[in-house]
Every structure is written in structure tokens, then in C-alpha cells.
Image 1 (tube, rainbow, N blue to C red):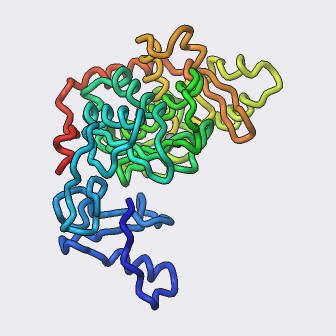
Image 2 (spheres, rainbow, N blue to C red):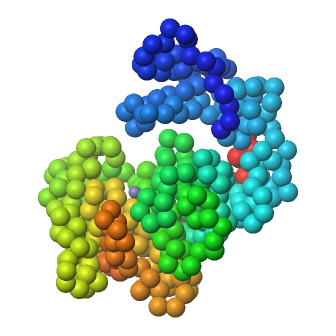
Image 3 (cartoon, rainbow, N blue to C red):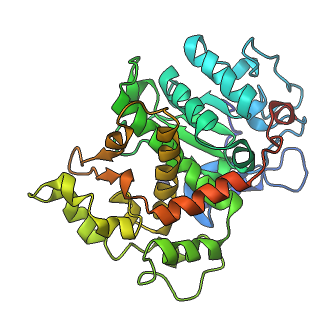
Length: 355
Ligand SMILES: [Zn+2]
């Protein structure tokens, strides 16, 4: 995270030449370039580590106190069980240790500092919302970064498959405040949504996504008749036929609470305005709704929990949410998938992360 790159050649006049220089670096000469600027096949505005162990000292870059010095490798462990150079202090450190020891997921300060409440919320979600067998299969979520730039109401979290991470706001977004119930549910929903993206990539196929969308989401008008072979097919990024209507629903002058609860949405399992953006977001949000229902039924969301699953747009860029629109058929499908996976031992236990 804090490694400084060797400087680019002085004649690197343009961005492409500069990029090409970094993409030619291969510190441990294993044939795997150290850096890439490609994300999902497109040129990104930031370079990503491409070789998980650039200096070849046997410790993954993230866990390596100096990822580009082979003489510096394993860090000693802090009292919470996390490599010392990544250990958080205080209450955040306690939850960081629990997340790492129980789930092999490491919370790391990035451009912001983690607050205890977000990590505690993720712990509740992982402990009670997602069965162990499924958690173990979410191999594309190993790190939780605190990012500057997330806000507490719209752009709450993100999934970064390339670096096997989820990001969430930190002190800049939440300050040192405890979460009230509404905030806790919003953050929990966002984590569940990002895990939904991971669940898709880690455990499903592109054709299964197509089948779900047409069976439970009325996506057939937006999709091609035949399933795509890749999750990243452009057809999977078209918006839902109800997109405009969904936008209106949150801004109607009539009773908006009633409008966002109509059976129309339920028939397509449209649990939020955002879910109409594309098939991926529809799936991630339906997944999140299913997980939140499981948590509610287990008493983890307090009294009258269904009421907490509804939110009207808070400002012009906001969108409505009504997780009660989850279709019972989608829920049944999800429960079957979640509970069918036997509680295997996690392939991402802390032991393995040390390598
Ligand atoms: Zn999403």
C-alpha cells in the first residue's frame, strides 16, 4: 500500500508510454508482470498490482510490510492476530481481529480510517446472514478497505473483484459516531449487496444469471433471448424495462411509500430503484434483500424489521429501496442455494492467508 514505484523513464511523454513502462516491470522475473492498467478488459485510470507477490518473497503484497523488497517479508502478528503493520487500534482493532480470525477477511485502512461500527456490522452479517459453506466460497472477498469518497447514503460501498476487496467509508463518512438503527441497516444492506456481486462471480454462471433474470425479474425484454457466455456481456448492462417508472415512483407527488410497495415491483423482484440499472445490480440487490430478510427473521434487525427495509430518496441523486418487494420465488431460490452448500472448512482461513 505504501510502496513507492521506481520512477518512469524521463522520456515517457505520454500516458501510454508511462503505462507501458510500468507494465513491463517484473521484479521477481516469474513472467507475470507486476502491474496492470486493465480492469475487466478496459484501461483503468489507476495501476493495479498484477502479481500478488511482486518481490517473490512468499508473502502476498498486501500482507508484506514491504511488497517490493524481498529481504522484508513476514510481519510479526499484532495481539489481535493481524500482521502488525496492518493492525488497527482500539475497538476497530478488536473487530478487525475477529473478522480476520473467523472469516479470513482483513480490514485495512486505505485512503480513510476504518470506524468500529462498519466492521461490527459486517461481522453480524457474516455470522448470521450467510451460512458458513457459502462464506467459504466467496473467494473474491479477502480485504475490506476504508476508502475516502464513499458517502453514507448513496455510494456506500463497492466491490473490487480485481483486488478481491470490498470498500466502505471510514471516519470521513461516519465520524466517530455509533450507528443508529437506520444507518446500521443501510450499511448492512450495502455490504450484503457487494457480497451479492461476489456470490455471482464466485459461485454462478452467466447463463444461470440470465435464467434467474428472465424467470424472476422480467428481464427478457432487455436481454438477448440466448444467455451470454460472459458476465461482462454488454446485454447484462442494459437497464430494466421499468427503469423510468421506478424513477418516477420515488418522486411521485402521490403517496410514495405506497407507490414503491406495489405488486408490480414484487412481480419482478425489483427491491430498489437502483436494481433497475442492470441485471448485475438487480441480482446484487435481490441477494441483499434475501440476506436482510434472513437476518430480520433471526431477530438481528430488532422489532418491526420489515419497516426498516424501506427508504425513500433522501436527495436528488438518491433512490428508493423496498426490500419487501423481494419475490418469494427468488427468496426460495436463494435460500436453497445458501443452505445447500455444506459447511465446509474455509479455504480462506487465516492460516492460508499467511502464505
Ligand atoms: Zn452493485
